[in-house]
Image (cartoon, rainbow, N blue to C red; front, side, top):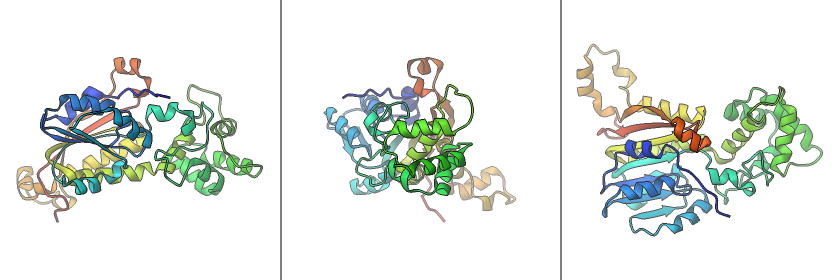
Length: 319
C-alpha cells in the first residue's frame, strides 16, 4: 500500500538552506522524499543530494527517483559523519536537512505499530532490522523503568500509574497489539476524555525509547558540525518540546563565546577577534512554525518548529 507524506515547512527549509545550484546537500530523513524532490529541483547539473533513512520502506520508495545527482543510504541520520567520511565529504556539505520524528507513512501503516488508533503489532521500530521493539519494553521492563520512560520521554503526569497498570495487566498475558495497550492506558490514566487520546504521551515515550531518538538527534547534530562547509546551513524540524529543546540548546552552545572568556575585560569586538574561531554556528533568523494555511492543508504540521543555523569558519574541536 502506498502512503502519502506532505513535507512540512518545505519552502521555509529551502530558504533556510540557501541552496547553491552546484552545492552538495544531505537530507538525513528522506521519508517519502518530499523535501528531497523539491531540493533536487533547485539544484543545477553539478549539484548533488545525498539522502539517508533508517526505514527500509523509505529507502525502497527512493528507488523512484531516477537522477544521477541523487543517492540514498540505509542509515540513521546519527551516522551522517561516518557516511561523509566514507564519501570523502567531511567539511564539504553545503546544507543538511533533518526532519525529526515519526513520518506520516509510519503512523498511517497500522502494521508498523505506531498508532494508538489503529490495531497492529506492538512494534514502533523505525529501522525494521533493529532488535528492540515496543512489545519487549512493555512486557519486560520493570515498573520503575517504564515510569521513567513515560515521564522523561512523554512528560506524562501519571507515568507511575500507567506503568503500574501495565505491569499488573501483563501478569495475565503479554501485550502484543497496539489497541490492547491503548485501551489499558485510556482506563489507567485519570481524567475525562479530551481531544488528545490518553495514550498519546505514553506511545510517544515508547517510540522515542525504542528508537533512541534523542540520543540519535544529539549525535546527528554533533556530526553536522564536522561535515558542514563554512557557510553551510543546518535546518532541523522538530515536533515536540524534547527535540526542540535539544536543537535550541545546541545552537546556543555553539553560537556563543566560551564561558571562560565572557568575563574578560575586553569589548565584544576584541573577544570575537581573539576567540571567534571557537564560535562554530550562527543562528539564522527565528524559529519558524507552519502558517495557518499550511496547518489547514496538513494538520500534522501544527506542532512543527524549524530552526536554522550556519556553520562558521572555526575549526571543530578547537582548544
